[in-house]
Length: 264
Image (cartoon, rainbow, N blue to C red; front, side):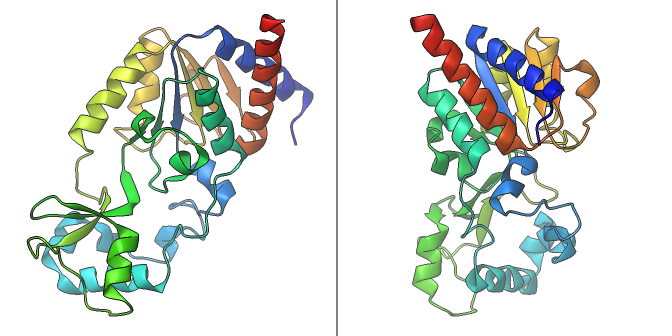
């Protein structure tokens, strides 16, 4: 439930959005929990069901049983198959349609920003995308649905159709570096924006969590919308601890009203 103090902050953020010329939104797991995707680190989350050791790049490359275990997980039902964009994703996509958004930088791997309507070229996925599989040999990228369909219900781990190389989910495993090109572009966007809005990130996973700090250091306004406190709350211009969907929906409504008023 949004209280009066938060309503006032929402109005302030809407004003910042209508005045800004270069807006970046930075999202984390907290935006997708409202779509039914559990936070990886919270009680009941992903790491309470799976051994994080199975998601180190070294073990994936050297242990065939680890790869089989992951494949059994995929064929038993994709973690994100039933997830749908929620009000927060839809509000962010609408900001893009209104011409108010430069890009989305996300730590999430669930493809929900694109499904909500953000242009794929405007979504920078720092940790990859679970909807894709990449060959570690030749680099060819496959939609996971294509690989699943081709394998049927076989528990044999598929290999690349082009070079028979190892296929890996196109996400960042422990021990891997973030994709250099994506990180470089996202860092540049953060440094050049005049307003950065954090939605649903606890800002504790680095190096991704540096990007809002870079924006603030470069002179941008910083807004944080997250259920719990973050290490950057003390430097943010506005902090709202509440549901991402409810807050972003209200911010969008206020932005629309202000834009309509300015055109009247």
